[in-house]
Length: 461
Image (cartoon, rainbow, N blue to C red; front, top):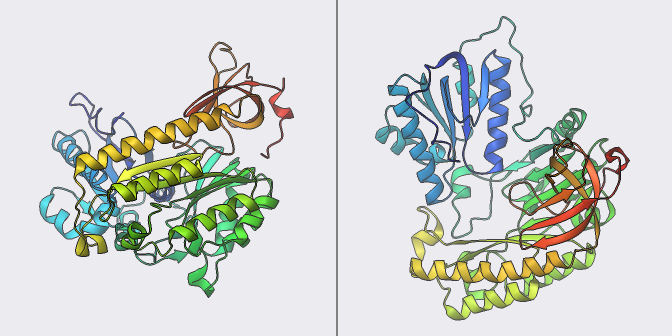
């Protein structure tokens, strides 16, 4: 459901002391919203996140500015909230995040009715400008936050920014240079979250591969994940958004050795044709990509790889697209997404390359690519039938045995990857259970719970 669909003229007047926060875009944005919510709570405000009917004294929109559709969605939401403000259903509108970081001057001029504007990094000023609603406001640590995810799962952002400057990507323009968080700070946050009941940690960044390099010139990803795995209560650690060039190979040893580091890697490859990779300024070629994939699979047997591919980039003709199809066909990625090139102002590609592939050809290539991936995914999932896997249950009503429980394996990240529907399950959400896989679809699995008591299930993969 759209975040704008339920802003109705019949909604009651706004509530004093209430602040609604609405998050657009990626999980990295979500972490910022969670930190904002914690600081607002510390000042005595009642908060809500992504409520269907905003009714706050303030509504803060954390915008996305990465691609055209996301920008349009953010702007449409702002305009609808301003209409709700005019009708007296909310008090004030504030905006933060990637869109306003990138286009602040233009937005202020074009949407002057917004009460306060912030970028991606200065939103603490919003909190400082609000009056205290408690006599003794708290001072949360910089990383403290109110989770909006299920209580057993959290995203853990370990760095911000990117130094890669790929030809198509506006992230460095928005977020700036890569900046790593200190290891000790991340470990403290992990320990606190684990103490509060979080068992699954999805480690995120714009570029995991560069973690630590800005601190002393070396990657410290392997050290960080190894130390995280030692923290009591940490059952699953899953890695998102690695970069293929200068990939930190020592992380593979940690993945192979530590049971609570999931055999899962999200690494965006974008393409395989050398001319396209060169135009993309990806700092790696076809030979290097194939060599990296072989090494990852050799050193972490059974690993599931998620990747993202782009079609329609300047220089991609039918021959280069055919090469991409052959690459997907031979690699048989466990998880894969695809999107069409969209020229982003300010990027190297927009300045130096002509967006020459027509939109209808881009769409045809996406459809062809995803049809191939659907066949691969069905084949891979079918091969799992009869196997026993550990599943994290996310939704279940033990009192309703006719409705299967819903969960995920260690190979499935929240929201983007397949789910498994489990019959005969008495486990509660947040518990781990052993499951035998009994059925498969391209993007979902079916299974039956094996143990009679979910507390008997180990918490590791």
